[in-house]
Image (tube, rainbow, N blue to C red; front, top):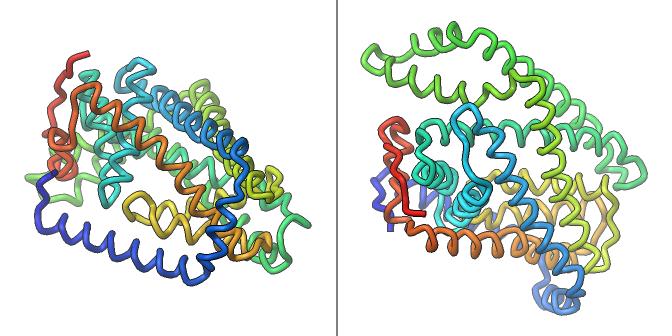
Length: 347
């Protein structure tokens, strides 16, 4: 196992406690006897289709990552997808979102790209994901009239307006920072003690490299198209699985449930346990009026579809390329990405 310092032990403990609390809240609304009966009645064809779309969404994520990485370097599609799977496997098995670091370090070792650059690209990816989901959520909320409960609609409308404003503001700030890159970096490094300014400047340059794709109009639109396809595939996966339970969702409803589930996914628990379940359960019950047993069964199986197959793929990839979690210096990378030297693994 990875050797963790005291602060990391505290983060691990906090992550596990948070997962336990959220899982307890989820189980309070889940009539377990009925949940078992509902899950036993799932239609396997719809379940298989959902698994295929879940895996496809990770393939799309890996290929899109290659576009984001262009300012840093290039990598074969197999390496991009395999490293993505490895990262999600690590996030499922390790606490505190360690998989985000694992993913950047694996592809750095496989390709020779600078680790600081690959790690910075994951920050860019998260920002792009946030922008895409905000845009999809705002659009779905605008079309949600008659598709969700009246109480939910009263909340969705102002939240959608805020989401649109946050998206527009964020894009504006990113554009300004990139346009005045050196000035922004100089101002940010001034707040650090003098002995750390050089190191901080290097990290910020790598972070800006990861965002450089946003300055290229052609690449920006391509990135937006990839991102929309990725997240709409995730929504379609959710809709297919719902059909297996006899829940009829259209695309607008699927995007709304997916958007709420991402709020739960953002909670830093191992494998998104607890937060992901509670968020989906909440969305189905409060927005669509689905019963507690059905919504709970769906949340449990949806979590499994999203995380189990990709975890198995990621572990197989790590095994085939000769990596183990022991060889991935997660703690060192978190403390100082520049100090992590890229090494080439055997093909």
